[in-house]
Length: 114
Length: 116
Image (cartoon, rainbow over all chains, first blue to last red; front, side, top):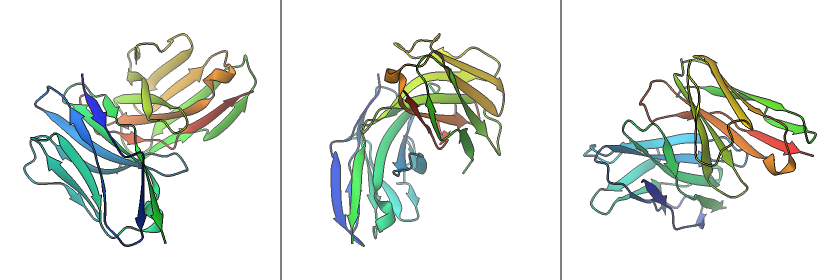
């Protein structure tokens, strides 16, 4: 069975600082994908970034980067130069090849202070 | 990214009535759609997976007669909450994948259901 763990229920960061949101995962599968989604107060789930288990380089998308450490089974999200609009819930998720289902972590509420 | 539209965004219904929620993929054909439920300040809980033209696969503990899912076309899946009760009040959100086996899914805006 797959499991995602996000150990930070809440994070408070000053605007323009970088922030790292932690995510560890557990799976016995060799082929899997790791995702990060942002959920603002409106409720929609916004896809941010994806990392495949066989990708050798860390994924980056604009201000978002994924610090993928396969041996440690961690996939932390790094947001550079945080903005007030980054305040939201952030979910880490994992999908296993062929299974289609996404397993979500508990989420981290990020608050950016001006 | 691909666009998924969910309707309605909010609905209030009386106990005992049924409510239908629609999930549409606007610019791609979704062979697979997923329905999730989210309790306040909690993570998303997968309810069921539906593939176009076949019966939905429900997760353990989800009542299939209570939560009817229909995926009649490649762009539309519906979730009907039958004989709704206050404990069914929740945030329901769908997602859609472009191909079978593809894990990357795009989400709708979600529906907040309140049963009074």
